[in-house]
Each structure stands twice: as C-alpha cells, then as structure tokens.
Image (cartoon, rainbow, N blue to C red; front, side, top):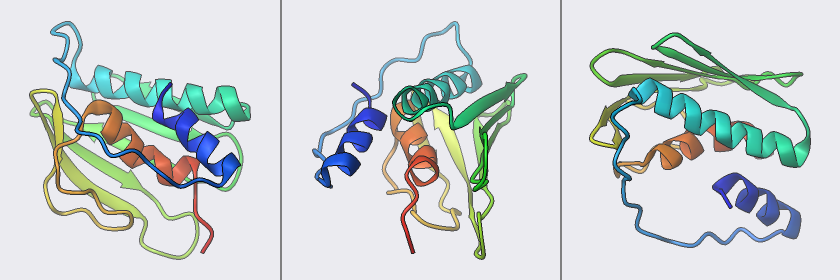
Length: 149
C-alpha cells in the first residue's frame, strides 16, 4: 500500500499518526530518465487517489521535461514540474486562492531528490534527501489533501 491510501485511511479514521522510517533510495533503472521516473511515480500516486475517491485529477507528461497535475474540476490546485537535462527540477504550484503558492527548485542525483534551498510556500521541504515516492508525496499531499484554513 502506498502513502496515498495510508493518508486516505488516516483522514477517514481521524488518525494523524505517521510511522517514522528511514528511507533508502532504490537504484534508478538505467532505462528510465529522471523525468520518466518522476512522472511514473506521480501518475501512480494520482491513480491510487483516483481509484479510492473517483476521477478527480489527471497527470499530463510532455516530452522529456514537463509533468503537470491537473484537477478535473475546481478548485484548481495544480502542480507543474519541469526538469532540465542537468537534473534540476523546478516546481510551481500556483495558489488556489489568495497567497503565494508553492515554488522552488530541486536537484535529482543518484536516486535522491534534494531541495536547493529556495523553496517558497508551505509546507517546506525537510532539507533531507527524498526518494521519488517522498518527492511525489511532498508535491501531491497539499493538492490531494488540502487543509482548511
């Protein structure tokens, strides 16, 4: 079971406990680009969410550099992930309402994704290297499970 189903179950039962675990980066298959791996992880997480809640989001992957998460209906919380040939990942999540949204850059190397320290918005990345699943969760959780202000 992935983090999406776990998060869905926590919200249904009202439990907010998360197990602390040390993540180890799986070796990245040589046959996939980092763009393909990130797109595949985000697509799988969105499909897992849609399977549980109905078709609410879609993922669009364009060429070798762009992944978008788009809601099928308002509110329009989106994520745009652009990746250059050097492994620099630019993330932009425009605000749904008033506010600054979320944006920043990350570096993808050796199976890990690390924030470059310029992230704006909440939640902030932890500063620790993330696996593909951890990165996907960091990007998607505020979109799939928005908190009431």
